[in-house]
Amino acid sequence: MKHQATPYLTFGGNAREALTYYKEVFEGEIIGMQTFGEAQFPTPPEMDNKIMHAQFKKDDLFFMVSDAFLNQSVHQGNNISLALELESEEEIQTLYKRLSANGIVFMELQDTFWGAKFAKVQDAFGVIWDLNYTFAK
Image (tube, rainbow, N blue to C red; front, side, top):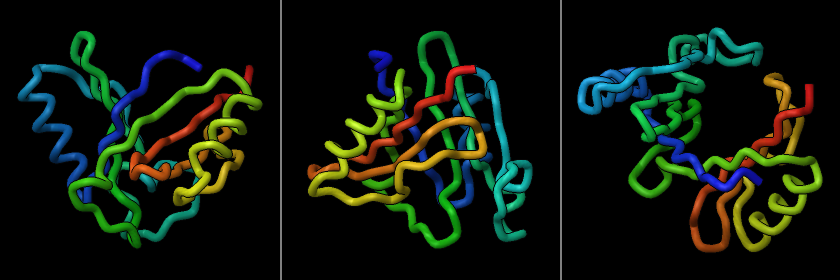
């Protein structure tokens, strides 16, 4: 595992506005942004302009941002997760099993269109984890 957890902020439809705000506040940059409509993933038309994934950086400050999907509500406490980039399929399977035990699985461990295995779980203590293992190229 890479030894850094990345904050992942989730917004209720105003992620683009929040990114603009953070860009001004921290004088940083949005280094990548993809809408649901741009992704190779079937989504309802009302999600087309919502942010599926974006990254913000200013010096050592780095975090990722998205809008919640249609049926997900956002409130303080569930709007931030820790994203872990893992180094092997074995590692992601082990952590998925451990973190989901006595927790809640939001997205089962699965292959994704972005070339990775991914899962989203809430552990037994209420911490939300985004687990990602990008396949070797």
